Image 1 (tube, rainbow, N blue to C red):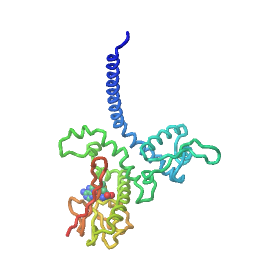
Image 2 (cartoon, rainbow, N blue to C red; image 1 turned 30 degrees about the vertical axis):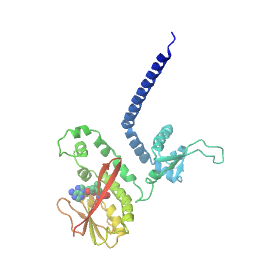
Image 3 (cartoon, rainbow, N blue to C red; image 1 turned 180 degrees about the vertical axis):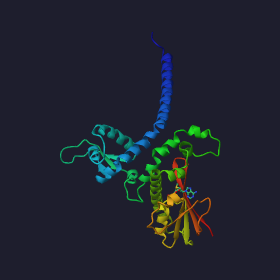
Image 4 (cartoon, protein in one colour; image 1 turned 60 degrees about the vertical axis):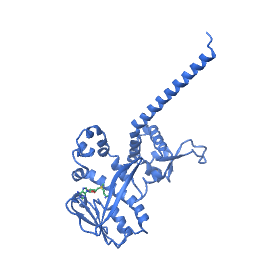
Length: 298
Ligand SMILES: C[S@@+](CC[C@H](N)C(=O)[O-])C[C@H]1O[C@@H](n2cnc3c(N)ncnc32)[C@H](O)[C@@H]1O
C-alpha cells in the first residue's frame, strides 16, 4: 500500500522524535557511566605511581614507548597489552601525552611514544616540585575506603565523627599515632604538599608585606614543618617553630632552622608574633582550594 505524502511526513517526524529521545537516553546513560567509572581514573593514576611509570618515562629522557617503559618497571610480560590500555586511560585524562611513532633510522617504528605532561612532570621532580607523596596518601586504601559507606555516615546524627573515623574507628591523627607505616606515608604527603605550595606562596609573597613586621611565627599543626622550612629559608630573620602532636614531633627532622614543639593546639599554643595555620581544604566548585592563614598575635 502506497503512503501519502502526509503519512510519510508523520512517520519521519516520529522517527526523528524517537531517535532524539533515544539519544537523550543514551547520553544520560553515558553520563551515569562516566560517574560510575570515574574511580577508574584515580585507580589508573595509582597504578602508574605504584608501578613507577612516570619515573620510567622520565629516566628515559621524558618520552618512551611501551617496550622501553617495561624495561624499567616490574611487570609480568603477559600484562604488556594491559599496560597499553592503562596508558590509554592516562593519556585520555592528560596525565601523559603521546607523540606519533617515529622513524629511528631502522624503518618506521609503529610504537606510540608516551611523554610527560605538565601534570606528570609534578610526579618526577625533586622535593618541592614533586607531589606524588601526597597522591600516594590520598589514593591509599585507608583514605579511599572512608568514602565507601557515606550512606552510613549520613545516617549518624550531627555532630558525628568524620567518614574516616566511622570507617576506621579512629580519626587520622589517632590512627597515625598507632600505625607507624600510615604515619610515615601521611607525614611524607604533607611535606610534599607543603614544599610544593609554599614555594609558590613564598614567590608570590616574597616581595610583599605579608611577613614584614613579625620576628617569630608558630605553625600550628605544622607536621614535619615542610611549610615552615620554606618560610624560614625565604625569611631568615623569622624565628620559626612548629607545634604538633608528640608522635609527629618525635619523627620530625632534627637538622633544620625550625624548632619543633610537642603539644596539643587545643590546650596551648606557644607564643609568637604570628600564628600560621595551613591545610584546611574545602571543595569549591570543580577545584580544591587550599587555605592558609597568618594571624598576628600582637
Ligand atoms: C593536614 S595535616 C597538615 C600539616 C601541615 N600543616 C602541612 O600543611 O603540611 C594536620 C596536622 O595537624 C596535626 N594535629 C592534629 N591535631 C592536633 C592537635 N590537637 N594539636 C596539634 N597538632 C595537631 C596533625 O598531627 C597533622 O600534622
